[in-house]
Length: 86
Length: 154
Image (cartoon, rainbow over all chains, first blue to last red):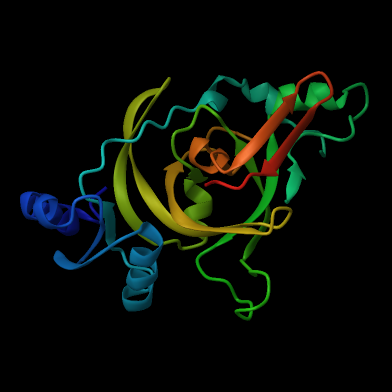
């Protein structure tokens, strides 16, 4: 889980500055360097993809809280997964 | 206004469409990949086609099977903590394009890596509340029908 370690460390180091100047914007880091801030995720991703192709690169919204990903499907038993050709 | 069916029109053997909806959940077939190989004015042509996507009101973010993400060589764009009934764990976030032919809708967004194949799940994609926000969803459990209808968001 260290593929983005340099980028995440750089983001953490710059967090206060980013929150002051780019709150709610999407920022891109690559190779531990701040590469830009964008109004929305799609613009940030288009830019990162054009410049760094498959990366890795960090794209993160400044000031965003944690996301809950609760998986209701986990409750479905494995035996129910045979769709029988559906 | 586009609409699509995420339920089941036909049963199989003794199973009715309502049985299948209970067993499998609301499902869309989608295409997934890093880049489209189609001309700009043509529908997206993504490498992984007719991938099963579960509509999951329990998910606060969209997810992609980690094995599929690695097979497609999708870019890693973040790490995040997943919190749910299985406890907490960290996962990678992947950047992908996802096209829903029946809605003619292309998404270009982050997907949390989730272990669907490893968990012997039938689906390879989870579309959560963020996705559903743009649709009026009608779930008829008695008939096995799930209809998504586009709604103009003002």
